[in-house]
Length: 587
Image 1 (cartoon, rainbow, N blue to C red):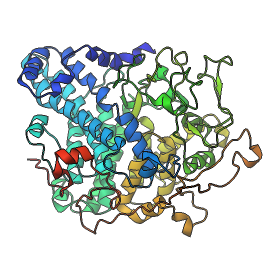
Image 2: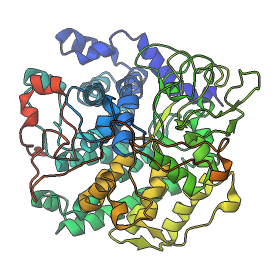
Image 3: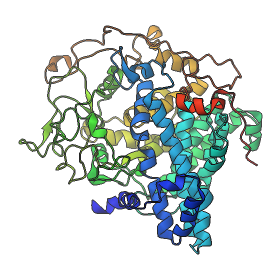
Image 4: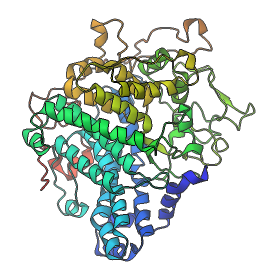
Protein backbone atom coordinates (compact mmCIF):
# COMPACT_ATOMS: atom_id res chain seq x y z
CA UNK A 1 0.00 0.00 0.00
CA UNK A 2 2.82 2.42 0.77
CA UNK A 3 4.31 2.31 -2.70
CA UNK A 4 0.92 2.76 -4.33
CA UNK A 5 0.66 6.14 -2.63
CA UNK A 6 3.86 7.44 -4.26
CA UNK A 7 2.56 7.86 -7.81
CA UNK A 8 2.50 11.66 -8.04
CA UNK A 9 5.90 12.18 -6.35
CA UNK A 10 7.44 9.76 -8.82
CA UNK A 11 5.89 11.72 -11.68
CA UNK A 12 7.39 14.88 -10.21
CA UNK A 13 10.71 13.12 -9.92
CA UNK A 14 10.52 12.22 -13.57
CA UNK A 15 10.23 15.91 -14.33
CA UNK A 16 13.54 16.54 -12.59
CA UNK A 17 15.07 14.83 -15.58
CA UNK A 18 12.74 16.55 -18.04
CA UNK A 19 15.22 19.32 -18.83
CA UNK A 20 12.80 21.66 -20.56
CA UNK A 21 10.22 21.67 -17.74
CA UNK A 22 11.16 24.83 -15.88
CA UNK A 23 12.47 26.42 -19.08
CA UNK A 24 8.93 26.42 -20.41
CA UNK A 25 8.38 29.35 -18.06
CA UNK A 26 10.82 31.38 -20.17
CA UNK A 27 9.09 33.21 -22.99
CA UNK A 28 11.25 32.46 -26.02
CA UNK A 29 10.56 31.02 -29.42
CA UNK A 30 12.90 28.16 -28.64
CA UNK A 31 11.01 27.03 -25.56
CA UNK A 32 7.70 27.31 -27.39
CA UNK A 33 9.17 25.12 -30.11
CA UNK A 34 10.20 22.63 -27.43
CA UNK A 35 6.64 22.66 -26.07
CA UNK A 36 5.21 21.95 -29.52
CA UNK A 37 7.58 19.03 -30.00
CA UNK A 38 7.08 17.61 -26.51
CA UNK A 39 3.34 17.12 -25.97
CA UNK A 40 2.69 14.25 -28.34
CA UNK A 41 0.85 11.94 -25.92
CA UNK A 42 -1.15 12.12 -22.71
CA UNK A 43 1.84 11.00 -20.63
CA UNK A 44 3.74 14.14 -21.68
CA UNK A 45 0.85 16.34 -20.66
CA UNK A 46 0.25 14.56 -17.36
CA UNK A 47 3.95 14.95 -16.64
CA UNK A 48 3.54 18.71 -16.95
CA UNK A 49 0.53 18.76 -14.64
CA UNK A 50 2.33 16.51 -12.14
CA UNK A 51 4.90 19.28 -11.74
CA UNK A 52 2.10 21.52 -10.42
CA UNK A 53 1.72 19.33 -7.35
CA UNK A 54 5.20 19.90 -5.95
CA UNK A 55 7.88 22.45 -6.86
CA UNK A 56 5.73 25.59 -7.31
CA UNK A 57 4.21 25.16 -3.83
CA UNK A 58 7.55 24.69 -2.09
CA UNK A 59 7.74 27.92 -0.08
CA UNK A 60 3.96 28.05 0.37
CA UNK A 61 4.49 25.01 2.58
CA UNK A 62 6.64 26.98 5.01
CA UNK A 63 6.20 30.74 4.53
CA UNK A 64 2.41 30.80 4.17
CA UNK A 65 2.09 28.53 7.21
CA UNK A 66 4.16 30.86 9.36
CA UNK A 67 2.29 33.97 8.20
CA UNK A 68 -1.19 32.55 8.65
CA UNK A 69 -0.53 30.79 11.97
CA UNK A 70 1.23 33.80 13.49
CA UNK A 71 -1.56 36.14 12.39
CA UNK A 72 -4.12 33.75 13.85
CA UNK A 73 -2.44 33.76 17.28
CA UNK A 74 -1.66 30.04 17.08
CA UNK A 75 2.12 30.38 17.54
CA UNK A 76 4.12 31.57 20.52
CA UNK A 77 6.20 34.66 19.76
CA UNK A 78 8.82 36.10 22.12
CA UNK A 79 7.65 39.69 22.03
CA UNK A 80 11.06 40.96 20.97
CA UNK A 81 12.45 40.08 17.55
CA UNK A 82 11.93 38.36 14.24
CA UNK A 83 9.34 38.06 11.52
CA UNK A 84 6.94 35.95 13.58
CA UNK A 85 6.42 38.57 16.28
CA UNK A 86 5.84 41.40 13.84
CA UNK A 87 3.50 39.19 11.84
CA UNK A 88 1.57 38.36 15.02
CA UNK A 89 1.39 42.11 15.76
CA UNK A 90 0.25 42.89 12.18
CA UNK A 91 3.25 45.14 11.62
CA UNK A 92 4.95 43.25 8.80
CA UNK A 93 7.19 45.11 6.38
CA UNK A 94 7.39 44.61 2.65
CA UNK A 95 10.90 43.15 2.53
CA UNK A 96 10.18 40.17 4.78
CA UNK A 97 11.33 36.84 3.37
CA UNK A 98 8.03 35.13 4.21
CA UNK A 99 6.11 37.76 2.27
CA UNK A 100 8.36 37.59 -0.79
CA UNK A 101 8.51 33.79 -0.72
CA UNK A 102 4.75 33.35 -0.38
CA UNK A 103 3.98 35.77 -3.22
CA UNK A 104 6.59 34.20 -5.52
CA UNK A 105 5.47 30.65 -4.79
CA UNK A 106 1.80 31.32 -5.46
CA UNK A 107 2.47 33.19 -8.68
CA UNK A 108 4.77 30.38 -9.79
CA UNK A 109 1.79 28.03 -9.44
CA UNK A 110 -0.31 30.44 -11.52
CA UNK A 111 2.35 30.95 -14.17
CA UNK A 112 2.90 27.24 -14.70
CA UNK A 113 -0.84 26.62 -14.74
CA UNK A 114 -1.32 29.40 -17.30
CA UNK A 115 1.14 27.78 -19.70
CA UNK A 116 -0.65 24.45 -19.43
CA UNK A 117 -4.08 26.05 -19.95
CA UNK A 118 -3.06 28.44 -22.75
CA UNK A 119 -0.51 26.37 -24.65
CA UNK A 120 0.28 22.81 -23.64
CA UNK A 121 -3.28 21.45 -23.74
CA UNK A 122 -3.94 22.99 -27.15
CA UNK A 123 -0.62 21.69 -28.46
CA UNK A 124 -1.37 18.19 -27.17
CA UNK A 125 -4.80 18.15 -28.85
CA UNK A 126 -3.24 19.35 -32.13
CA UNK A 127 -0.74 16.51 -31.79
CA UNK A 128 -3.56 13.97 -31.58
CA UNK A 129 -4.06 13.58 -27.82
CA UNK A 130 -7.63 12.64 -26.89
CA UNK A 131 -9.51 15.88 -26.18
CA UNK A 132 -11.30 14.55 -23.09
CA UNK A 133 -8.02 13.45 -21.50
CA UNK A 134 -6.36 16.73 -22.42
CA UNK A 135 -9.26 18.69 -20.91
CA UNK A 136 -8.79 16.74 -17.66
CA UNK A 137 -5.21 18.00 -17.58
CA UNK A 138 -6.43 21.55 -18.17
CA UNK A 139 -8.83 21.03 -15.27
CA UNK A 140 -5.91 20.06 -13.01
CA UNK A 141 -4.17 23.29 -13.95
CA UNK A 142 -7.31 25.32 -13.35
CA UNK A 143 -7.73 23.70 -9.93
CA UNK A 144 -4.17 24.68 -8.98
CA UNK A 145 -4.58 28.21 -10.30
CA UNK A 146 -7.78 28.67 -8.31
CA UNK A 147 -6.15 27.33 -5.14
CA UNK A 148 -3.27 29.78 -5.56
CA UNK A 149 -5.67 32.70 -6.04
CA UNK A 150 -7.56 31.63 -2.91
CA UNK A 151 -4.36 32.03 -0.90
CA UNK A 152 -3.43 35.30 -2.60
CA UNK A 153 -6.89 36.74 -1.93
CA UNK A 154 -6.70 35.72 1.72
CA UNK A 155 -3.25 37.24 2.20
CA UNK A 156 -3.33 40.32 -0.06
CA UNK A 157 -7.06 40.71 -0.81
CA UNK A 158 -6.70 42.60 -4.12
CA UNK A 159 -4.12 41.01 -6.43
CA UNK A 160 -3.29 41.02 -10.17
CA UNK A 161 -5.02 38.34 -12.22
CA UNK A 162 -2.41 37.07 -14.68
CA UNK A 163 -4.05 35.33 -17.64
CA UNK A 164 -0.95 35.15 -19.81
CA UNK A 165 2.59 35.39 -18.38
CA UNK A 166 3.91 36.55 -21.77
CA UNK A 167 1.72 39.64 -21.76
CA UNK A 168 2.75 40.36 -18.21
CA UNK A 169 6.42 40.06 -19.18
CA UNK A 170 5.91 42.60 -21.97
CA UNK A 171 3.94 44.94 -19.72
CA UNK A 172 4.72 44.29 -16.03
CA UNK A 173 2.93 47.45 -14.87
CA UNK A 174 -0.23 45.79 -13.59
CA UNK A 175 -2.54 47.17 -10.90
CA UNK A 176 -4.30 44.72 -8.61
CA UNK A 177 -7.75 43.45 -9.46
CA UNK A 178 -10.62 43.71 -7.03
CA UNK A 179 -10.94 40.98 -4.42
CA UNK A 180 -14.40 40.11 -5.69
CA UNK A 181 -13.05 39.57 -9.21
CA UNK A 182 -10.28 37.33 -7.92
CA UNK A 183 -12.97 35.32 -6.13
CA UNK A 184 -15.06 35.07 -9.31
CA UNK A 185 -12.03 34.09 -11.38
CA UNK A 186 -11.24 31.23 -8.99
CA UNK A 187 -14.89 30.14 -8.98
CA UNK A 188 -14.92 29.99 -12.78
CA UNK A 189 -11.77 27.84 -12.82
CA UNK A 190 -13.21 25.43 -10.27
CA UNK A 191 -16.54 25.09 -12.07
CA UNK A 192 -14.52 24.02 -15.13
CA UNK A 193 -12.40 21.67 -13.00
CA UNK A 194 -15.44 20.05 -11.38
CA UNK A 195 -16.80 19.28 -14.85
CA UNK A 196 -13.68 17.91 -16.53
CA UNK A 197 -11.71 16.24 -13.74
CA UNK A 198 -12.22 12.54 -13.11
CA UNK A 199 -11.52 9.94 -10.45
CA UNK A 200 -7.79 9.50 -10.77
CA UNK A 201 -4.61 7.99 -9.39
CA UNK A 202 -4.03 8.62 -5.68
CA UNK A 203 -2.56 12.09 -5.28
CA UNK A 204 -4.18 13.63 -8.35
CA UNK A 205 -7.10 15.97 -7.78
CA UNK A 206 -10.55 14.77 -8.79
CA UNK A 207 -14.04 16.14 -9.40
CA UNK A 208 -14.64 15.95 -5.66
CA UNK A 209 -11.40 17.82 -4.99
CA UNK A 210 -12.69 20.63 -7.19
CA UNK A 211 -16.09 20.54 -5.49
CA UNK A 212 -14.41 20.79 -2.08
CA UNK A 213 -12.21 23.72 -3.12
CA UNK A 214 -15.18 25.41 -4.76
CA UNK A 215 -17.16 25.01 -1.53
CA UNK A 216 -14.29 26.69 0.34
CA UNK A 217 -14.36 29.70 -2.00
CA UNK A 218 -18.17 29.91 -1.98
CA UNK A 219 -18.03 29.96 1.83
CA UNK A 220 -15.61 32.88 1.73
CA UNK A 221 -17.85 34.65 -0.79
CA UNK A 222 -20.94 34.02 1.36
CA UNK A 223 -19.24 35.68 4.32
CA UNK A 224 -18.20 38.62 2.14
CA UNK A 225 -21.81 38.99 1.01
CA UNK A 226 -23.00 38.84 4.63
CA UNK A 227 -20.98 42.00 5.19
CA UNK A 228 -22.66 43.68 2.18
CA UNK A 229 -19.34 44.06 0.37
CA UNK A 230 -20.06 42.79 -3.14
CA UNK A 231 -20.68 45.46 -5.76
CA UNK A 232 -23.95 45.74 -7.64
CA UNK A 233 -22.38 44.51 -10.86
CA UNK A 234 -21.08 41.37 -9.11
CA UNK A 235 -24.51 40.74 -7.57
CA UNK A 236 -26.21 41.23 -10.94
CA UNK A 237 -23.68 39.01 -12.73
CA UNK A 238 -24.49 36.22 -10.25
CA UNK A 239 -28.27 36.60 -10.65
CA UNK A 240 -28.95 37.77 -7.11
CA UNK A 241 -30.97 40.74 -6.00
CA UNK A 242 -28.85 41.71 -3.02
CA UNK A 243 -25.82 40.80 -0.96
CA UNK A 244 -28.13 39.01 1.46
CA UNK A 245 -29.68 36.93 -1.30
CA UNK A 246 -26.24 36.18 -2.73
CA UNK A 247 -25.05 34.94 0.66
CA UNK A 248 -28.04 32.58 0.88
CA UNK A 249 -27.30 31.27 -2.63
CA UNK A 250 -23.66 30.63 -1.81
CA UNK A 251 -24.49 28.84 1.45
CA UNK A 252 -26.82 26.54 -0.48
CA UNK A 253 -24.08 25.87 -3.03
CA UNK A 254 -21.65 24.97 -0.24
CA UNK A 255 -24.09 22.47 1.23
CA UNK A 256 -24.79 20.94 -2.17
CA UNK A 257 -21.11 20.57 -3.05
CA UNK A 258 -20.15 19.11 0.33
CA UNK A 259 -23.03 16.65 0.13
CA UNK A 260 -21.85 15.54 -3.30
CA UNK A 261 -18.35 14.88 -1.94
CA UNK A 262 -19.69 12.92 1.03
CA UNK A 263 -22.11 10.87 -1.04
CA UNK A 264 -19.54 10.29 -3.78
CA UNK A 265 -17.68 7.96 -1.45
CA UNK A 266 -14.28 8.55 -3.05
CA UNK A 267 -12.92 10.23 0.10
CA UNK A 268 -13.44 9.44 3.78
CA UNK A 269 -11.91 10.44 7.10
CA UNK A 270 -9.21 8.21 8.55
CA UNK A 271 -10.31 6.62 11.85
CA UNK A 272 -7.19 7.89 13.67
CA UNK A 273 -6.23 11.57 13.41
CA UNK A 274 -2.54 10.83 14.06
CA UNK A 275 -2.29 8.61 11.01
CA UNK A 276 -2.78 11.63 8.74
CA UNK A 277 0.74 12.78 9.60
CA UNK A 278 2.69 9.65 8.63
CA UNK A 279 4.50 9.21 5.33
CA UNK A 280 3.23 5.63 5.13
CA UNK A 281 -0.23 7.13 4.65
CA UNK A 282 0.64 9.67 1.96
CA UNK A 283 -2.37 10.39 -0.25
CA UNK A 284 -4.73 8.66 2.12
CA UNK A 285 -8.50 8.58 1.71
CA UNK A 286 -8.95 11.86 3.61
CA UNK A 287 -6.74 14.07 1.43
CA UNK A 288 -8.61 15.74 -1.41
CA UNK A 289 -5.56 17.82 -2.32
CA UNK A 290 -1.99 17.66 -1.06
CA UNK A 291 1.40 19.09 -1.97
CA UNK A 292 3.27 16.09 -3.33
CA UNK A 293 6.75 16.29 -1.89
CA UNK A 294 9.02 13.49 -3.03
CA UNK A 295 10.10 10.93 -0.43
CA UNK A 296 13.77 10.06 -0.08
CA UNK A 297 15.37 12.90 -2.07
CA UNK A 298 17.18 16.13 -1.14
CA UNK A 299 16.58 18.13 -4.34
CA UNK A 300 15.62 21.70 -3.34
CA UNK A 301 12.03 22.58 -4.16
CA UNK A 302 10.73 19.02 -4.05
CA UNK A 303 11.20 18.45 -0.33
CA UNK A 304 9.35 19.35 2.86
CA UNK A 305 11.59 20.60 5.68
CA UNK A 306 8.89 20.47 8.36
CA UNK A 307 10.85 18.02 10.54
CA UNK A 308 12.44 21.32 11.62
CA UNK A 309 9.44 21.61 13.94
CA UNK A 310 10.57 18.53 15.90
CA UNK A 311 11.35 18.70 19.62
CA UNK A 312 15.02 17.93 18.96
CA UNK A 313 17.35 16.31 16.45
CA UNK A 314 17.51 13.05 18.42
CA UNK A 315 13.84 12.49 17.59
CA UNK A 316 14.55 12.65 13.85
CA UNK A 317 17.75 10.63 13.86
CA UNK A 318 19.72 13.89 13.48
CA UNK A 319 17.98 14.81 10.24
CA UNK A 320 16.42 18.06 11.44
CA UNK A 321 14.78 19.34 14.60
CA UNK A 322 15.09 21.60 17.60
CA UNK A 323 13.16 24.37 15.91
CA UNK A 324 11.97 27.50 17.67
CA UNK A 325 8.32 27.47 16.61
CA UNK A 326 6.06 26.67 19.55
CA UNK A 327 2.34 26.54 20.28
CA UNK A 328 0.84 29.74 21.71
CA UNK A 329 -0.72 29.73 25.17
CA UNK A 330 -4.20 30.18 23.70
CA UNK A 331 -3.83 27.41 21.16
CA UNK A 332 -2.47 25.02 23.79
CA UNK A 333 -5.20 25.92 26.28
CA UNK A 334 -7.82 25.26 23.60
CA UNK A 335 -6.45 21.74 23.08
CA UNK A 336 -6.30 21.08 26.83
CA UNK A 337 -9.76 22.46 27.54
CA UNK A 338 -11.27 20.57 24.61
CA UNK A 339 -9.90 17.29 25.96
CA UNK A 340 -9.82 15.36 22.68
CA UNK A 341 -6.70 13.22 23.12
CA UNK A 342 -6.26 11.85 19.59
CA UNK A 343 -6.32 15.26 17.94
CA UNK A 344 -4.08 16.82 20.58
CA UNK A 345 -1.52 14.00 20.25
CA UNK A 346 -1.49 14.40 16.49
CA UNK A 347 -1.08 18.18 16.69
CA UNK A 348 1.24 19.07 19.57
CA UNK A 349 4.02 17.37 21.57
CA UNK A 350 2.93 17.45 25.21
CA UNK A 351 5.40 16.07 27.79
CA UNK A 352 4.52 12.50 28.70
CA UNK A 353 2.92 11.53 25.38
CA UNK A 354 4.43 8.39 23.85
CA UNK A 355 4.57 7.70 20.10
CA UNK A 356 5.32 4.09 19.22
CA UNK A 357 5.85 4.89 15.54
CA UNK A 358 8.37 7.69 16.10
CA UNK A 359 11.80 7.12 17.62
CA UNK A 360 11.96 3.52 16.46
CA UNK A 361 15.68 4.15 15.89
CA UNK A 362 16.16 4.92 19.61
CA UNK A 363 17.10 2.30 22.18
CA UNK A 364 13.60 2.50 23.68
CA UNK A 365 12.08 1.75 20.26
CA UNK A 366 9.67 4.66 20.63
CA UNK A 367 9.63 8.28 21.72
CA UNK A 368 8.13 9.86 24.83
CA UNK A 369 8.01 13.66 24.94
CA UNK A 370 10.32 14.58 27.83
CA UNK A 371 10.06 17.34 30.40
CA UNK A 372 12.38 20.30 30.22
CA UNK A 373 10.79 22.96 28.05
CA UNK A 374 8.50 25.72 29.25
CA UNK A 375 6.72 25.81 25.90
CA UNK A 376 5.18 23.05 23.80
CA UNK A 377 6.49 21.98 20.39
CA UNK A 378 4.43 21.07 17.37
CA UNK A 379 3.84 17.41 16.48
CA UNK A 380 1.78 17.83 13.30
CA UNK A 381 4.01 17.38 10.18
CA UNK A 382 6.85 15.89 12.28
CA UNK A 383 7.45 12.36 10.97
CA UNK A 384 10.64 11.30 12.76
CA UNK A 385 13.64 9.47 11.38
CA UNK A 386 14.41 7.58 8.20
CA UNK A 387 13.63 4.34 10.01
CA UNK A 388 10.31 5.72 11.26
CA UNK A 389 9.28 6.52 7.70
CA UNK A 390 10.57 3.47 5.81
CA UNK A 391 13.28 5.63 4.22
CA UNK A 392 11.02 8.51 3.14
CA UNK A 393 12.56 11.06 5.53
CA UNK A 394 16.08 12.27 4.72
CA UNK A 395 18.06 15.37 5.57
CA UNK A 396 15.86 18.40 4.91
CA UNK A 397 12.89 16.36 3.73
CA UNK A 398 10.11 14.65 5.66
CA UNK A 399 8.76 12.94 2.55
CA UNK A 400 5.25 13.74 3.82
CA UNK A 401 2.55 14.87 1.43
CA UNK A 402 1.20 18.11 2.95
CA UNK A 403 -2.61 17.95 3.05
CA UNK A 404 -4.16 21.22 1.81
CA UNK A 405 -7.81 20.12 1.71
CA UNK A 406 -9.14 17.35 3.92
CA UNK A 407 -12.41 15.48 4.29
CA UNK A 408 -12.98 16.85 7.80
CA UNK A 409 -13.12 20.34 6.25
CA UNK A 410 -15.89 19.14 3.95
CA UNK A 411 -17.95 18.11 6.98
CA UNK A 412 -17.32 21.36 8.85
CA UNK A 413 -17.98 23.52 5.80
CA UNK A 414 -21.38 21.89 5.46
CA UNK A 415 -22.06 22.67 9.12
CA UNK A 416 -21.08 26.31 8.62
CA UNK A 417 -23.23 26.63 5.52
CA UNK A 418 -26.18 25.13 7.43
CA UNK A 419 -25.55 27.74 10.12
CA UNK A 420 -25.63 30.45 7.46
CA UNK A 421 -26.60 33.81 8.92
CA UNK A 422 -27.89 32.29 12.15
CA UNK A 423 -26.03 32.18 15.44
CA UNK A 424 -26.86 28.50 15.96
CA UNK A 425 -28.39 25.52 14.20
CA UNK A 426 -29.91 22.13 15.04
CA UNK A 427 -29.76 20.95 11.42
CA UNK A 428 -29.59 17.15 11.61
CA UNK A 429 -27.10 16.66 8.76
CA UNK A 430 -24.86 19.46 10.05
CA UNK A 431 -24.88 17.91 13.55
CA UNK A 432 -24.04 14.47 12.15
CA UNK A 433 -21.07 15.87 10.22
CA UNK A 434 -19.88 18.08 13.08
CA UNK A 435 -20.05 15.18 15.54
CA UNK A 436 -18.27 12.88 13.12
CA UNK A 437 -15.22 15.17 13.25
CA UNK A 438 -15.41 15.51 17.03
CA UNK A 439 -15.84 11.79 17.60
CA UNK A 440 -12.68 11.09 15.61
CA UNK A 441 -10.85 13.70 17.73
CA UNK A 442 -11.92 11.77 20.87
CA UNK A 443 -11.16 8.31 19.46
CA UNK A 444 -8.48 7.65 22.11
CA UNK A 445 -10.70 8.77 25.01
CA UNK A 446 -14.11 8.05 23.53
CA UNK A 447 -15.66 7.91 27.00
CA UNK A 448 -15.31 11.70 27.14
CA UNK A 449 -17.01 12.35 23.82
CA UNK A 450 -20.34 14.16 24.21
CA UNK A 451 -22.22 14.63 20.93
CA UNK A 452 -23.25 18.20 20.25
CA UNK A 453 -26.99 18.86 20.06
CA UNK A 454 -26.59 22.44 18.84
CA UNK A 455 -23.89 24.08 16.73
CA UNK A 456 -23.14 27.70 17.55
CA UNK A 457 -20.97 30.08 15.57
CA UNK A 458 -18.33 30.19 18.31
CA UNK A 459 -18.34 26.42 18.81
CA UNK A 460 -17.75 25.83 15.10
CA UNK A 461 -15.07 28.53 15.04
CA UNK A 462 -13.20 26.73 17.86
CA UNK A 463 -13.64 23.29 16.30
CA UNK A 464 -12.09 24.44 13.04
CA UNK A 465 -9.18 26.04 14.89
CA UNK A 466 -8.42 22.77 16.70
CA UNK A 467 -8.87 20.55 13.66
CA UNK A 468 -6.79 22.63 11.24
CA UNK A 469 -4.04 23.94 13.51
CA UNK A 470 -0.91 24.74 11.45
CA UNK A 471 -2.70 23.99 8.19
CA UNK A 472 -3.02 27.66 7.06
CA UNK A 473 -6.79 27.63 7.70
CA UNK A 474 -7.49 29.53 10.94
CA UNK A 475 -6.34 32.90 9.64
CA UNK A 476 -8.69 32.53 6.69
CA UNK A 477 -11.50 31.80 9.18
CA UNK A 478 -10.66 34.99 11.07
CA UNK A 479 -10.62 37.01 7.87
CA UNK A 480 -13.92 35.53 6.71
CA UNK A 481 -15.55 36.42 10.03
CA UNK A 482 -14.17 39.95 9.80
CA UNK A 483 -16.18 40.47 6.62
CA UNK A 484 -19.39 40.59 8.65
CA UNK A 485 -18.18 40.95 12.28
CA UNK A 486 -15.09 43.18 12.22
CA UNK A 487 -15.56 44.45 15.77
CA UNK A 488 -15.45 40.91 17.18
CA UNK A 489 -12.32 40.08 15.19
CA UNK A 490 -10.48 43.24 16.24
CA UNK A 491 -11.41 42.64 19.88
CA UNK A 492 -10.17 39.06 19.57
CA UNK A 493 -6.89 40.03 17.91
CA UNK A 494 -6.31 42.80 20.47
CA UNK A 495 -7.20 40.49 23.38
CA UNK A 496 -10.13 42.70 24.39
CA UNK A 497 -12.96 40.16 24.50
CA UNK A 498 -11.92 39.27 28.04
CA UNK A 499 -12.58 42.86 29.12
CA UNK A 500 -16.32 42.31 28.83
CA UNK A 501 -16.32 38.55 29.51
CA UNK A 502 -13.76 37.29 32.01
CA UNK A 503 -14.62 33.66 31.16
CA UNK A 504 -14.26 33.95 27.41
CA UNK A 505 -12.22 31.19 25.72
CA UNK A 506 -11.28 33.70 23.02
CA UNK A 507 -8.08 35.34 24.22
CA UNK A 508 -4.91 36.23 22.33
CA UNK A 509 -1.79 35.77 24.44
CA UNK A 510 0.45 34.95 21.48
CA UNK A 511 3.47 36.75 22.94
CA UNK A 512 2.95 35.78 26.59
CA UNK A 513 5.12 33.13 28.18
CA UNK A 514 3.73 30.01 29.85
CA UNK A 515 4.83 26.72 31.40
CA UNK A 516 2.92 23.52 30.67
CA UNK A 517 4.39 20.17 31.72
CA UNK A 518 2.03 17.47 33.07
CA UNK A 519 5.02 15.32 34.07
CA UNK A 520 6.39 17.98 36.41
CA UNK A 521 3.16 19.64 37.50
CA UNK A 522 0.41 16.98 37.61
CA UNK A 523 -1.41 18.64 40.49
CA UNK A 524 -1.81 21.79 38.47
CA UNK A 525 -3.08 19.76 35.52
CA UNK A 526 0.17 20.63 33.76
CA UNK A 527 0.07 24.40 34.34
CA UNK A 528 2.33 26.25 36.77
CA UNK A 529 0.94 29.74 36.29
CA UNK A 530 -1.09 32.03 34.11
CA UNK A 531 0.40 33.51 30.96
CA UNK A 532 2.69 36.38 31.78
CA UNK A 533 4.30 39.27 29.95
CA UNK A 534 8.03 39.22 29.41
CA UNK A 535 10.72 41.73 28.60
CA UNK A 536 9.99 43.57 25.38
CA UNK A 537 6.34 42.56 25.27
CA UNK A 538 4.16 44.68 23.03
CA UNK A 539 0.38 44.30 23.18
CA UNK A 540 -1.55 43.90 19.95
CA UNK A 541 -2.93 47.12 18.52
CA UNK A 542 -4.55 45.85 15.35
CA UNK A 543 -6.68 48.32 13.42
CA UNK A 544 -8.76 48.31 10.25
CA UNK A 545 -9.16 51.87 9.02
CA UNK A 546 -10.76 51.45 5.61
CA UNK A 547 -13.58 53.98 5.32
CA UNK A 548 -17.04 52.44 5.04
CA UNK A 549 -17.74 51.57 1.41
CA UNK A 550 -14.09 51.94 0.38
CA UNK A 551 -12.37 49.08 -1.40
CA UNK A 552 -9.06 50.81 -2.04
CA UNK A 553 -6.25 48.53 -1.04
CA UNK A 554 -4.11 49.85 1.82
CA UNK A 555 -0.37 49.41 1.30
CA UNK A 556 0.01 47.28 4.41
CA UNK A 557 -1.70 45.71 7.36
CA UNK A 558 -1.05 48.60 9.76
CA UNK A 559 -4.36 50.01 8.53
CA UNK A 560 -6.04 47.07 6.80
CA UNK A 561 -6.04 43.58 8.31
CA UNK A 562 -7.25 42.13 5.02
CA UNK A 563 -3.89 42.51 3.34
CA UNK A 564 -0.16 42.04 3.75
CA UNK A 565 2.21 44.59 2.24
CA UNK A 566 3.07 43.74 -1.35
CA UNK A 567 6.67 42.45 -1.61
CA UNK A 568 9.05 45.41 -1.92
CA UNK A 569 10.91 43.96 -4.91
CA UNK A 570 7.65 43.51 -6.81
CA UNK A 571 6.50 47.04 -6.00
CA UNK A 572 9.83 48.31 -7.37
CA UNK A 573 9.28 46.54 -10.70
CA UNK A 574 5.53 47.21 -10.71
CA UNK A 575 4.65 50.47 -8.91
CA UNK A 576 1.07 50.00 -10.09
CA UNK A 577 0.64 47.33 -7.40
CA UNK A 578 -0.06 49.99 -4.81
CA UNK A 579 -2.69 51.75 -6.91
CA UNK A 580 -6.44 51.30 -6.49
CA UNK A 581 -7.73 47.90 -7.63
CA UNK A 582 -9.39 47.70 -11.03
CA UNK A 583 -12.21 45.62 -12.48
CA UNK A 584 -11.37 42.44 -14.35
CA UNK A 585 -12.98 42.09 -17.76
CA UNK A 586 -14.78 38.73 -17.79
CA UNK A 587 -16.06 39.22 -21.35
